[in-house]
Structures are given as C-alpha cells and as structure tokens.
Length: 183
Image 1: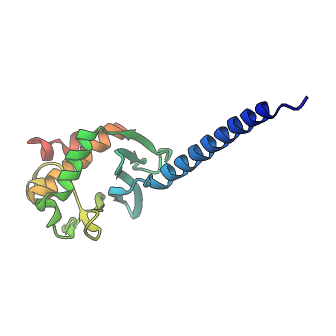
Image 2: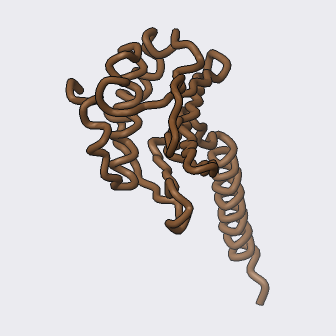
Image 3: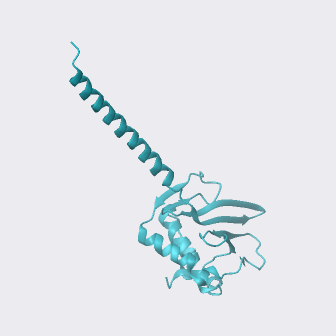
C-alpha cells in the first residue's frame, strides 16, 4: 500500500544524498582548479663539447614544489630522468640563493674564454623568479683556480647546483670539490 509518510522520508533522504554528492563534486573541482602546476625555478642545461661533438642534456631542473629532475650527461648512458624531492627547508635555501642580490645581479656570460683542444663543459642556467623576467647565465664551472675567479654568488650557485645534482643523480663530483670547499 501507498504510504505518504514513507514516500516523504524517502524523498528527503534522496535529496540530501544528491546535495551532498553535488557539493563534494563542486568542492573537488574548486580544489583542482586552485592547484597551481609547479613552475621551474632553476634549469641548468649541460653543454659538453668534445672532439667536434656537442652533447646537451638537462643537468638539473628544480621545480617550485621541491621536485628535482636530472638527465644523463653523456649520450652513452640511457637518458632516463631521475627525480627526487627536497624538503621545505632546502627549497627555502635554494630560493633564497636564487633571490640573493649576488646572484640576481650577475652578468650573462661566464663561459670559457680560452682555447681547449679536447673537451669542455658549459652550463646554460635559467633562473625564473615570480616578479622578474627569467635570468640567463652561461657558466663554465670547473674546480680549482677557475672557480676562484668567479663572483661569489655564482660560485655559491654552482656549488648548490652540484649539491642538488648529486642528491638526485649521484654523480661523482670530485673534480669540482676545490670550488666548493668553503660551502
């Protein structure tokens, strides 16, 4: 038999379920639209020149969510990207170095200005800050004497790049150690 009271309760429960489901869907959509994609804070492209060949690779990429991504340096290795995550305190250190006036006021070209017969490496560094246009720096970062001639901010940036690369990729960086001995 037809019972009006039962029908009324059924309609009320169904309406509550529909409203709750709709509200959850709207909330999830709003959260998804508020989630900003991570932006690239620092990108370093490694350009290796050797016996007439130019080999480029993404040496290091640091994203605003703390993700670090690296690729193989030389084309003999498989070019599988390696990723890791740094903590908030380390991300704050990286960001504060990128915004430090000694880095922010750097020139554009710190490439090698001498003749090499066999091979050399240069980094094309791009620093993205939220309030300024991207900053591009070309750097030949080598251990020993050459690094001591670099501006302090650039030497510290080079050492930070190496530290992050070692954390994500595990490279042997003994060659660069003299440049970073004070860090």
